Image 1: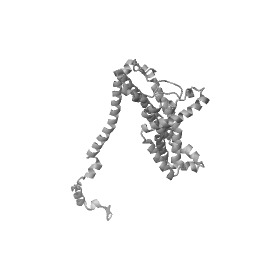
Image 2: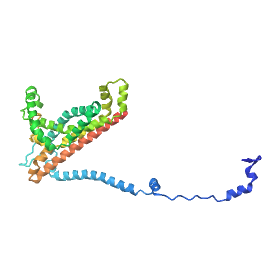
Image 3: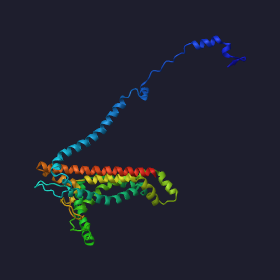
Image 4: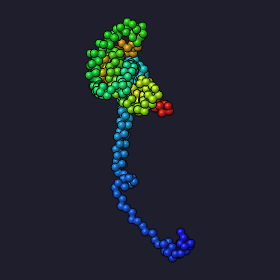
Length: 344
């Protein structure tokens, strides 16, 4: 800055020296309040307590699973040591001679669950597509409510209904199937009505509400832009659902299927009432069989020796391992499908 052509500092050197030597005034710092402390993170007692509580709840779940595995393994260790790996692939279950093997029960568990998925998955996904994409709201809401109510029905009621309604119907279906397709081992044998086919039908009815409800919610969660983009390209309603909506939601649909499979693997009472509880491995769907869950439920009260009880608990441990393997494979499959969807 210049004053009459000269620099200001040269015009007033004394004032400039006084300003440079004067001490600057310090503004008083404001008193910190509670909100400022919480925002700056100086006082986090609430956050710490909340973090400890939720971490404890998560750790309790993991601890419960670990204690469950340890308890079942220790209780079934006597049978696992006595019979070794043959406990899994042996077909003999004789409490009198104290010889135990669970292969027929493993076969029955896998066969009934697979049959239930074959019957329930097309119906469940089709119903979910109808409710999420095609049905009007006045029809979709009541049907969705009925499906969710069906999932809440106790298994013993479904077992009684299966025993008095499903089994006679299955017997009437098995007779003509045996006459026409009897040369195929899957459809050979007498038509008892009680057996793998009846158990698969009952399981399909039990897992259908879970599968339909979860798949419906997944389809409704698909962004509207996916549908609008497909329709803008000239696609029909069916092409939009088949090529845009369902592929976008396939990971969730697979997750719903695995959730239903987990329910089918562990179902006990309803299956025990219609499967026949016969300890055998038969390729025929008409033959009576048993599952791991029904084996434990029907013979646990009769376990009068330590080895017998240990064998039943070891059978439960085998069922737990099968369920865990199925869930691990399912998680890997869902992860791969999710990655593929993101890449596309």
